[in-house]
Image (cartoon, rainbow, N blue to C red):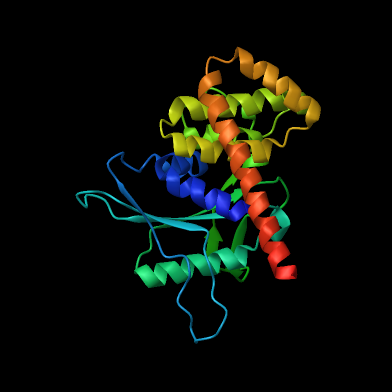
Length: 252
């Protein structure tokens, strides 16, 4: 499972909802009429052949009439806190700020698993800080899932399985995420896409799966969920078959 790709897709499919949920401190300043554009991920190399830095999902937010200055949101997903580097993130931000010639930059880090990480960077002396750097965080594993089970934000609903809840609530959380997707997403293809996302992160065991199927029969969104669930399962099986065939051909 590629967590980076999962979250890149989620943010690009639902940019307004992603900003509202992952960067709520700044998203209140984003008007509904704003234009949100993904920015190139690979940064220009200082020398050809050298390693380049790649961002997860930079989003440029611009007001339609230019009444406000544009803001660049740099959305970075980290599966575990121990892999996070504040120095790398600072490099990303400085690179893009220079490339786009702008200073209104908001770094946002989405942590999938809770853990300890450096929250700010100060370069200087006891007398003066010459370079300071901070970022917004969306620490999913610390967010109470029950506070978002009725949310109208589709990114929050899809991420319910990644939030904090008691193990005994896993089945309910999975179903509430799927109900939110069925309610808020009219596109059947996106329903299939993110039903799979929810199932991957819910990771129900056999007994939980049995309870889930019982709960699903009682859901008012049963029909809207069952079709995409079945299609997601079939897609996963087909993908597994294709990968097996490719591996067999390579070994042969």
